[in-house]
Structure formats: structure tokens, C-alpha cells
Length: 345
Ligand SMILES: Cc1cc2nc3c(=O)[nH]c(=O)nc-3n(C[C@H](O)[C@H](O)[C@H](O)COP(=O)(O)O)c2cc1C
Image (cartoon, rainbow, N blue to C red; front, side, top):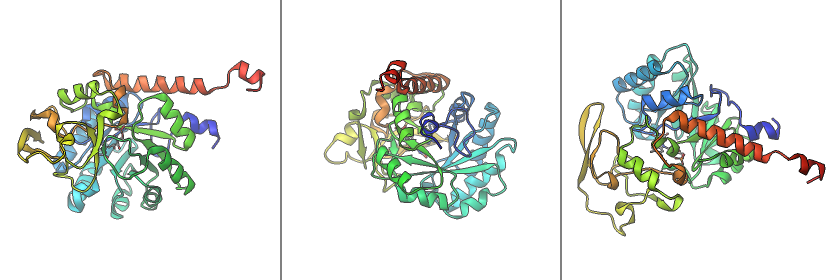
């Protein structure tokens, strides 16, 4: 592949889109409406299965497939779901998916080895998100054709300890036989161009879509993101461990993250999952959604370094279009001008 192919980004195997941009699976936030709107805009929308039971997974896949005729992704988190639920989720997704389009199974973290055989004969290709170069290689051994490299600039839970540029460079050096998608803090065309110059061929963005009109995020979470000035308003924390222990996460700063010792444990909100109402303890990993009532600003409001670029609640199609335009400008700015060619600059 030539340098200019890489800098333009192209279509990674199994990524059936006109623009190699993937919207992240985000529990409670990456709804069928969001995924469908992103896919309709020419990128790859993704629904998040998180801890949903098989029936709800089936319903989410059917709803998304009815909203868009385009391919979309289905996101699972093996370390949260555990083997039994994961099997049920994947089985439900494969069964519910219309067999007329190529699809993507997007796994956060390395999946169990059995997942590839479960997908055999289905329309799904496997895309795996990792945080180290070694895990990128391992993901390809487990059958991933596309590997998402998550740098520590990312919003949400973190899979490694390397900033994105180092992670890409380290993975390219290992010759991992996969198409590389960059994730973490990406919010404009210049960053998109830069990561492609390093060896990525597409991008996965989460934070940029949280304030989309179609997202499931609570309106106060969206407005906090809009008010955030940039990476200094985010922090890597371990304060939201309930329901997903052992993995640091990048969130918007709040009294919960900034207090020197953990605030007292108590219920601070109520939320609904698949129609059932649940109390939310302070320190829960659950993000505030449109179904949540209570102290939204004390909940886990995941956000990456790119949060400063979120300036309004916009339709997802406008977010994709703005990124496409910003990327085109960044490429045009990188082309040599007539003058620089004439003068050998
Ligand atoms: C609100 C939010 C929720 C997330 N939930 C998930 C999830 O359920 N599954 C997943 O694979 N990744 C999840 N992530 C992480 C993303 O996959 C990705 O690594 C991250 O969004 C990329 O960085 P960015 O947010 O700076 O664009 C989440 C990220 C955010 C911001």
C-alpha cells in the first residue's frame, strides 16, 4: 500500500462503509436509532449489547435492521458479560441479523477462542478493540480481520496504557496482519490524517457521538460534554467500578472523581434497562441515559480527550458529515502546493 492510500484511509476488510469511520458501541448510549443514523450517513453505526439479556439483544438487532438498510456493528464486552451471557448475546445477534448484508461483531477486549467458530457461516466479521501491540497480534490469531487500537486518550474504559500514536507505531512494528482502526481522542480531520500517516486505516469514535441527537445519553450528560473545554476536564479514574471492576476509565471530572477519598456509598439515581427500573449506587459503571433520574452529574460521564470539539447536540448525520469535511480539508492541506513543487520545498 502506498503512503497516500494510507493517508486517505480506505475500506478495511469487513468494514463495509464509504468512509472508514466506526461509531463505538456504548452501553445505554449507542441505541438502534444512533447506529442506524450513522450507518445511513455512510459510516459504520454500532449497537451496544453490554449486559442485555438475549431477548433484548434480539430486539435491538431487529429494530436497527428495520431502521437502516445499511450494514451495522454489534458490540459485546466479553469481560463484562461472561461466557454464558456472551454466548446467548452472540447467538441472538446471529439469529436476528438479516442475512442480506455483511455485518461486524465488535468485541471490546480479546474475545474467547470459541467466538470465531460461533460466527462461522454467519455474515459477521470480527473486529476486536485492544490496548497493546501484543493484544493486536493475539486478536488476529483469534480471527479478527480488523483491530481497533485504543489509546489512553479514549473516553470510557481503557484497555492499555499507551497513548494512541505509540500504540499504532508499536503495532505496525509487529506486522499484525489486520486492518488497523485508531481510537481515542480523535475529533477532527488533522488527527484522522495523522493516525493514518502512522499506519491506521480507519477511526473509531465514541465521545463525538454521545451528544448526537439520536444517542441515548441523558441531556445533562450531553450538556456537560458541550460545556467541557477539553482533555483537562477529563480524568482517568477508578471511582466507577460497580458493575465493571478492575478497569480504569476516562470520565468528565466531577465531585466524585475529585474528592481525595471516595464519597459515601448510597443510591443516587434510578435508571431503566429493558423496561425494568433499577437504583443506581454512587460509583456505578452505568452511564446516565434518557431513562435515568437523579444526580446525573455524580454518575460516570465517560469522555475522551476530544470532548472540547463537542459543541452542540447535532443529528448523527451532521457529525459524520463534519468529520468527512474536516478530513478532506486536512488531506488538502497536506498536498504540496504548486509553489512548493516549483521551488522544491
Ligand atoms: C460513553 C462511552 C461508553 C462506552 N461504552 C463502550 C461499550 O459499551 N463498548 C465498547 O466497546 N466500548 C465502549 N466505549 C469505548 C469506545 O469503544 C472507544 O474506545 C472510545 O470511545 C474511543 O475514544 P473517544 O471516546 O475519545 O472517541 C465507550 C466510550 C464512551 C465515551
